[in-house]
Length: 108
Image (cartoon, rainbow, N blue to C red):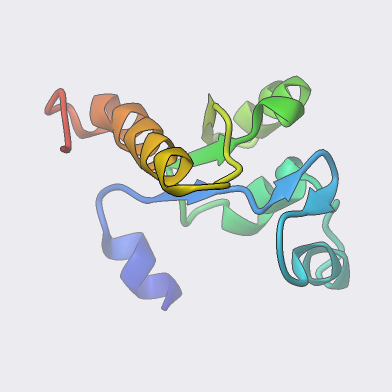
């Protein structure tokens, strides 16, 4: 799967960790098992070389510099998908953040 992801010209990831806590599932445990920090920085380390963009929640704004230092573009916005409108907003945020990387102005 990693090869398929690397072959794609643009890949975005949304951090499943917000303020050091997993939104859902075993993300914290998985990061720790790989020796990574259970934070958006650890997510960036895990996706380094795979994703061009990491979307992180506003609660993790203070980590954006550390993520950028890993060579990954960072986009900060609300990431909790509490309803259909929030899911749509997040999707739009991701597409907007990817657009400059595509050089096409818009991916919608």
